[in-house]
Image (cartoon, rainbow, N blue to C red; front, top):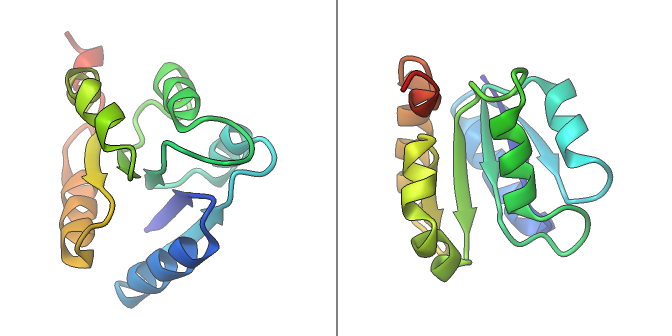
Length: 132
């Protein structure tokens, strides 16, 4: 599996890469610099873990909207992993309609792994709203 992680915290990127490596998954870390969306398209990940608040570069919501609207990426499952708890709660319905999983920081590593396993095993991944 190839997992893309978008977060501007280098320590977080290292931790998640280590956790996923224990599962034998390759992790690509993106720290918010450059064209994140173009980098995600090129990487062709099986799963994206996305922070909403990125200090440099694009906003996580903007990236999520681009992923959702592009035929090259709309099928890729996403876990929004962020300390922006109010934003997550305010848009919970929008996220749920798109099959986007959420994980509020701080979190338990086991919960992250459970969400990743679930997201990767869902038939049709996150495109439930596309068939409606």
